[in-house]
Image (tube, rainbow, N blue to C red):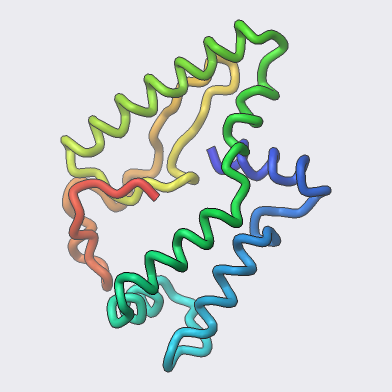
Length: 154
């Protein structure tokens, strides 16, 4: 799924990769301002620092990050897979259904670590397939920052 979104971002932003987006720059600037951590690079460091911050501050930073990111990239990417509006409706519906079923199954099975790089989208019909189950079925509790939630979709 990340490849679809990244390709669409490059198309709309004159060749800029997702890592060069305004939202990513804003997130990195915010991380650099965090107290006591000028070079936060590892997720474990970020997690420990964020746990010490006020909930409102983290929520506001997240909302600012989300507002800086174009919210229509996935829709545009799915639209670009189609030649007709009826094809778009078919692909969109299949995407929604398969993503919902996969999310429910992941929750019931306790599979965490779901992010854009852990989903494959079949570009012919929009079906979502889950991949990379390396940290799944309870093994995430042994990480340096334990995966304590039964399901996390990032």
